[in-house]
Image (cartoon, rainbow, N blue to C red; front, side):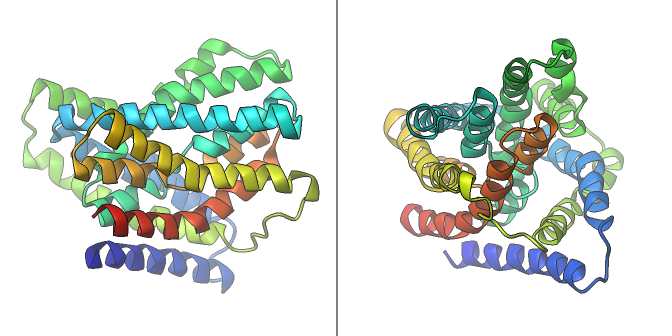
Length: 306
């Protein structure tokens, strides 16, 4: 438990550094996108490649993937049910809310949490691949259809495979599956780059918190609070039930699955909401509120499951 709390202290400290840098004016508005792009295109792909290339694929892509997929499907369906009965929102807005309820921040927050709380980035890789390769194309196709915009569905479906994180992860999986030995001359520089992944994404996230004020739009408050509650509380419970009672996974895998489910809503949800101009307030506020709520939830899971 002490190690887990220490991990949160490390994460909070680096996030705080990013927040202070932005609040003090030491960096401008251009810093956060620069940090995020560097993480997306360079450091995170390097980290995930080096981790997956030497991972036990059976352990990585067995139970945790089923838990992640199952818990996402359950909570997204729950938000859709609430929307149809109580909120009466249009299909596109409901889709954004459902995504906000179950699409976790496996990249910016998941990687640091996996490294410092779970002890390895291996646990976050299947979640990233599931979301980028399966969930994202489905959501974008639904949003396209719901907003009646003419778009290239093939381009949408192929977009995840043009994402550097997905490409690097898939190459790492291929290396591990074929057991191709990699020389230190290849792994050493990639490990060095991967070492910068965690501080970059945490400082970028800290910068994004500057000026954030959630729940200002009254018409979206209930939807936002429901999405946040489903994401922060219901999803980890569903993940635990699937991992422990249904699949009977080992205790450490159950804990890892719950922690991954307790991660906050991904900022990509706000990006997609903005692109289609639907549910932007719900997406933005759920990202912030679930980010705050995820800390006590993960600490509680740590106390109960470790």
